Image 1 (tube, rainbow, N blue to C red):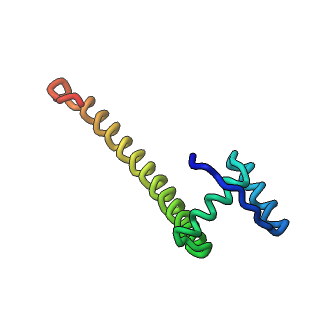
Image 2 (cartoon, rainbow, N blue to C red):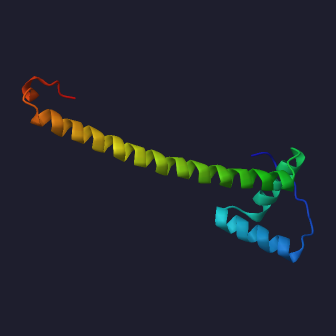
Image 3 (cartoon, rainbow, N blue to C red):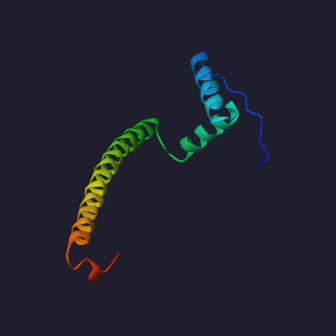
Length: 101
């Protein structure tokens, strides 16, 4: 890590409490969270953009979860159809000639 320089800043009590809570939840230090926020600010990322990105990410997760559920249902139906085909083949008089999967 690069050499760090001590910089004193004044925070509102709610800001400091929120930073402490965030750092504790992430297993980091308050100073690291502040450096990350400064990096985002310097990169031109606004709080509004982060909120929009967060909302879009949550919406995408909901859609993906729905797709997973739908695909699981399709897989169950395909498996059931394949099992039924296997049973029909096994009952067929020509079963001993059938190619096994």
